Length: 265
Image (cartoon, rainbow, N blue to C red; front, side):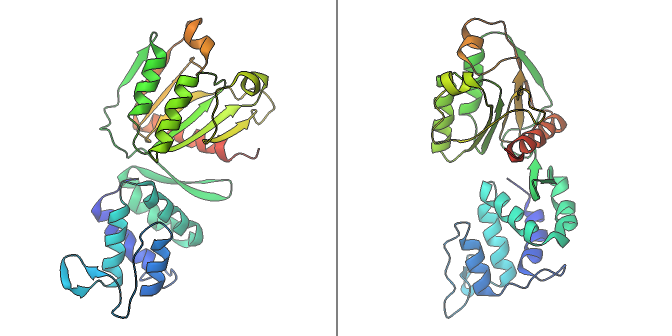
């Protein structure tokens, strides 16, 4: 998740408890809170860490919050920080929504928790849709290899090990990889080895096939179409994929994935 410095400066006072009736966080409390997300800072007898812009002084609570949020900007940790905060402080959801909506993000409720969905990512959005009918496996793998933040996959049948191995490689690079796969004998017996990945197997809520076939990469574009990530689709069938980075379309697919992923098993 990446937001502007303006948005960070607006969010910081809310997090430290200077406004909007949120719980006041002292210096030690702020350090301990941010350290949960990997900050690794120390509150010593002189106070908060040294101000990077003035090494003779220690940072104020607001300065420290802005500095730490900025350090986490453009990572999944920033998203986790804000999501955890709004779930603990639901009275500020409207205010946070006002701040992040112009940045391309919105807050949605799934499975009794609030999640941030958005299309602000790495690539420049051009609103282009491209269609492909050949060399589909390589198209998918090439786009997966370019992922920087997240890969969200909803796939009816997944038996293509080459694509699975690419997902494992991206997970090792700390890309957030999550999958929803249809639960049936094909995937159970012939499915690709997805060990080590975050996978949810499910049927459709009405008991039918979880028939979706899409992948959202970095919350910036979606790959969808008739093409299952299966050996048969690659070697025998006539198939197609669309690659679309229109913001509204990507957001809808992101929301749909969240609904599937957080649906009761």
